[in-house]
Amino acid sequence: SVILYNDSFLMREQGKVDMEDRGYQFGDGIYEALRVYNGKMFLLDLHMKRLERSARELRLDLPYDTPHLVDRLKTLIQKNEMNDGYVYFQVTRGAIARKHRFPEKKIDCVLTGSVEATPRDEDLHPDGIKVSLLDDIRWLRCDIKTLNLLGNVLANQEAYEKGADDAILHRGGIVTEGTTCNVFMVKDGTLITHLADHFILNGITRLFVLGLAEQLGIPVEERTFTTEELLNADEVFITSTGVRVCPVTKIDEHPVGDGRPGPVSQQLLDAFNRAIV
Ligand code: PDD
Image (cartoon, rainbow, N blue to C red; front, side, top):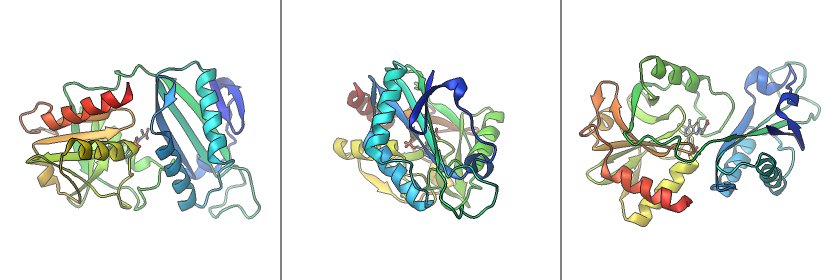
């Protein structure tokens, strides 16, 4: 496949990272993952805004402006002749002798991007998924989409080893999000999800689903909720670029509601699917 490397297109095998790249050494960088439907990047502007915000929060200078980056990503998709799949790209602070603080002299950041073709139904789970409820041990700036994902990786692995598809994380009994997704619960017809503060990544899918809920007249509360509320919910679902809206039907050994995907999740997924045709 063809990849994007700074401002050039290379074959995948030619993409090499310096051993002193700060992304490699410190996880010092940011990323975005977008879904491509029919050759077009979905919710592109929101992803680019989030990237710019992540860069500002880490005081990382992007290599070029957003319109140019969008142009490069579009060309990347075309060069790979991809219709449905993902675009992933990341930017690190660059390569320089290892020292924690920022480089004193200006160095070039390193941008890499790639695509992965995936049929649009592959990530969907009609029967819902099983999750494991685990401690959120991550840092306190989960709102920044950084490469530093060890807290997510460890929880995702632990969930996998317990036979679950993902983990739902909580901080001292307050549900935050999943390891790769945001979490919603439904109680008495109201949609409840953690507010967008430093404890969660403000998912682009989360924002889109909140918009769909408004259009459909589903009441929404953005607030903290407890693991107890989660276990007593009528429905639980996760949202992400990959799964869109995915029902959670089991939390550890606990069935959610009647153990089947619920009507509100289905209604939102249907509305979502209508929006991407
Ligand atoms: N993950 N929360 C976390 C911790 C995430 O890693 C993600 C996305 C989300 C959902 O964000 P969005 O709706 O913008 O995809 C929430 C991506 C897909 C990943 O790391 O691959």
